[in-house]
Image (tube, rainbow, N blue to C red; front, side):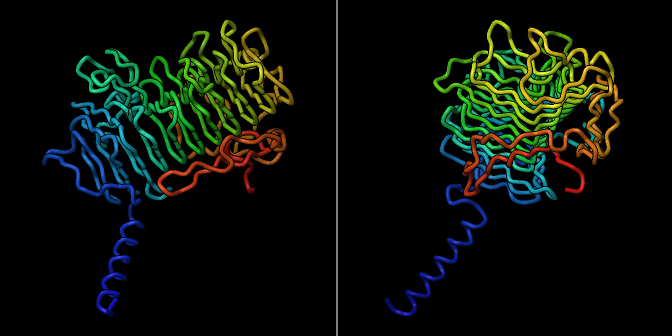
Length: 422
């Protein structure tokens, strides 16, 4: 090989390395087609850092293709078309804390009248979606209701019938991987998530102001092995989490839910299911170190379709500002508990001492103040009340688009945010 050939080879390798650094080698960077008015139909490749993508009709990541959304991208969904975001291939939404990805509607339409969304569909990942990542991504103002003309109905996705309120995120590949971390779900009509299979990690997320007449924060069915940790659930209509083994899939649902903070959940769904965490249908659930503050009821289960006998409930803490709340989280036929719990019997006992949140806030409140600080202050009974004597499912991590995402290390400070100053 002569000097000229060597130089060409070095130049080629440098070009390949540069391309791989910007986008994973599995990403087809061929530009997607889209009219001057905006995007619809097939989308894949890369949506570049800081760009604005206007979606005017249903978009589909085709099977075998990948869409990478880089940091700072704003995706504007048309409120007349109410697009669905269908993922048959892979999706990696890769924001940062400083520059999150935002999937939303035009700013002028983000009004109180649209508090519970319904302005676009949701992200619907079909069984051919192998990997889906939402990192530092904000999803808001969605959850529209399907019709016979909806692409999801025609394609047999989600519940595949007209009249269903779409979740913000649906994932359905029992052999797939889903990671949702450092993200925000807000202003949706019903469920934030509806998960029907896969290896699942939800960590360091916020779910608030969701559910007009129903809906959960995290809704997990059979086929899932999941860790749900360090999340905040505020005023979800029905439950923060619904953990179920319904669906009769080959893999029994096993969910480890730990170090989450739940506030004001369940009060806007005054039925038997409205509460904080709901267990049913032989789900194998492990529930540790969770902080329940002013939630409607404690952990509840379906008395006719109970959880797996191996399930564990341990080191959770309950607080109620008023006596009605405290009375409702006492143990009963359908409200269940475990060992090493902090559960008083009188209003105001076991104040978690949030750094900046007025615990007297009415339980029906769903307006979220981003200045609130849910860390706990010195003297909180949450400090040291938890346990680290268990192993999450994904301590070795899940690899997504070349990055490894590990489950948070359990904290002995109950709740999602730890103690102030630590």
